[in-house]
Amino acid sequence: MTRRPRVELLTLGGTISSTRAPGGAGTGVVPTSGAALLAGDLAPWLGGVDLVPRELRLAPSPSLLLDDVLAVAREVRRAAAEGVDGVVLSQGTDTLEETAFVLDVLGVARDVPVVVTGAMRDREAPGTDGPANLVAAVDVAASPAARGHGVLVAFADAVHSGRHVRKVSSTHTSAFTSAPWGPVGHVHERVPHLPLVAGPAPVLGVPPDALAPGGAWPAVALVGTGLGDDLRLLGSLADLGYAGVVVEGMGGGHVAAAAVPHVRAALARGPVVVCSRAGVGPVLRRTYGYPGGEIDLLAAGVLWGGMLTGAKARLLLTLCLRAGLGTSRGSGQGPGDEALRATFEGLAAA
Image (tube, rainbow, N blue to C red; front, side, top):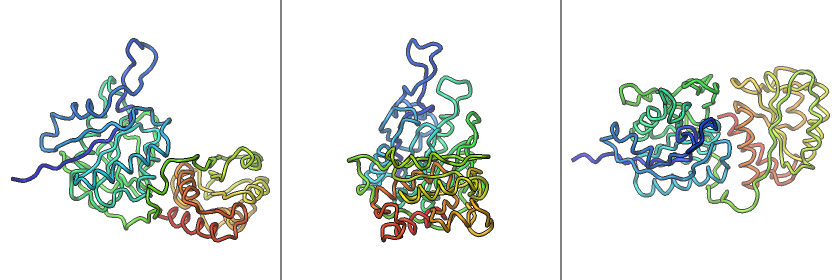
């Protein structure tokens, strides 16, 4: 007899778990439904899969912490050691791309497929999309074809790389993209088709236990910029306790000429990453030579943000600092800074 695939469902809350609070007409929806109830919802469609529910949190995703993501990483490692065929994680979509990115950077899908999903419509909304996304995620996680892809995101029948996925709509049920690369596959008639296999993406190389809770995480600021902004606030961030900063530059990673002295001042006190606010495409390296262009900023010592969005760059810099990289704060010349640059920019290029 063929063994039925065993998939563990980890839940963190979010819209996919949300209903109106009891007696709360007019107060909006909140996470109320844990893993067991979600698994019960799926029972009619998953007769060929043993689904094991495990509730980790019941929270809106803007309130999740990196410690919560590390808790997921530990649960995945435990589940893999117990021989499950796949793991599905459900959470709110506001930070879904960040969770998927961190889990992928930590390499948690090395031994077992890990698929992240959520919903854009709460459980009481007409045409709620949560059950369909969960069923597709379970189908992907249970499929041998999902192995070797890293962390995946299943949403609206598309399957995205967790390294590249982004939320691009606040309301549409097809809210996620992985442009410019596109999805690695789709789910049709309950069958995952994953024909596109990306090359192995580098991982941080630090065991999750080395990043275990205990003490405060390094604070990294995320700062946007635009027309006429001189970024004068950068000089005050270190005094507020920030260990580093990510600047979402314009276009290919640019800031106003008037902002350059403030970028340099920030670099004297900690690492500065420059990403593009455009959302698709890399920070350039060698095209624009004017003050505040990418050539000027890279020569000043900023970290190249590569293909990363600002939100992902902030998390990657936080992980690197927590791992002990960049210890010669502000000098830019010590071995810790060299290791930080090599590690961060290597992962940003993936």
